[in-house]
Length: 258
Image (cartoon, rainbow, N blue to C red; front, top):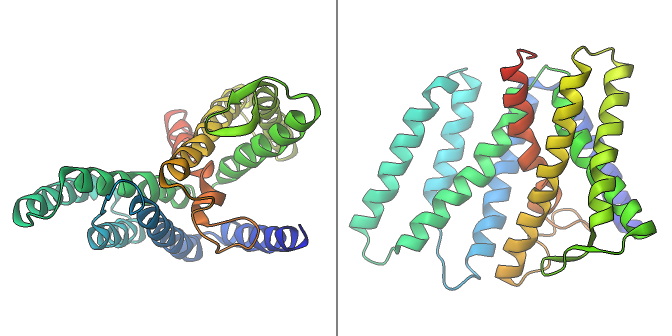
């Protein structure tokens, strides 16, 4: 427990500094997290029915994606995605050992990790970037304590037996509460919009958590890695944030808040 707490505090301080600084530091951090996350994902996939993700092409995809972000050419993402898709299909034709399942799981890895994480960097410099984290953490924290206190009905026993419906509702209310406090403290406008966003993020954060649990069940592993002692790997810590980051970004864009 002591190791877990120390590791968690150090991780939080690093993340806080990176997000606060933003800019190049945030972009480089997003790239590193994406590459490590892909590594963990590939290792997990290798344990599922002989799946063999094509690792190299996803690393290249990730690096190019972040280059586009650095040079502010996100409008070329569709070109990147098209070239990536065609490349995967060419590999399927050229390499007889590559199976359609390998192609599918490779594409899933690219969309699940670097694509979703990259939305954090797109919020760099905006105060709304913190919504990504406080909704995910608020959900996780409140869901845990409410679940431990009054949780009785299982939410998804086959994937995460400790999670309860009561805890899930507590997580949603927790996300709403911390978002409203955050909005009030920083005197943000559009409180109603942010309140709705916090609820949506909380629900998706829980799906992100359960998605990671499902993948680990299929791979028969406890954690994706051990980069953070007591906490597991990158994907174990960012499973919820993967789902909240794009939602916050596009929600803000739609309502012209960023």
